[in-house]
Image (tube, rainbow, N blue to C red; front, side, top):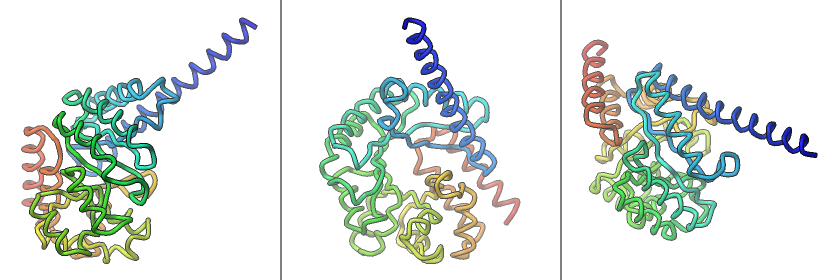
Length: 285
């Protein structure tokens, strides 16, 4: 019996180590993909609660991810950080636990706090206490909203959660008052056209209102959302905007600048990135 228990523990340990290797590989490959696409800064959004049972708790998993991020950043030269996200399908008290975790690691690799998953689930205002905790820690506040639900969803994220950035938010164009409010508050939108079409929010790339958002004065940060799920990396989002909306090189360069300015990248990374964008524009336009 003693040998059997030892063997079971040994097998479990080997399994956990293999999963840890998978986490490190995923983080490294995400960094490598962004480098190939010309990126200079990557913010990975992670929900530790989904992995707590495998890694011995949310703290252990967070430390694994942060170590993997630091390792991948050293190996690839890409600036990287983590946004810890709560899940709308879980209880708001779980979100408060994750907000405290994010605050604990603020300045140590964690730069933001988000709220992910289907925005049709949960009541946005009930997650406000968690976002207040993150706000007091100086973290970027980046909940999802204004995609599967309309403009009112985005308004709740802005007013109730004090969002600095909105995951998607494209449907704010359906309400001019919300559109104006988002622009006036300087809330950035993480726009991912390919995933908007994949999820059926819009029938085609040309229908995603990227130009309308920019013309209204909204900061638009193009992102890849989930490349493994939607099959499209960062550069493909720029290609999609060029093809579907006729964006010029100068307009694409400004999109890249807005993405950097809406990030929590250190000032030297932002400066280097902006210089790189200017150099690209001077060379290829």
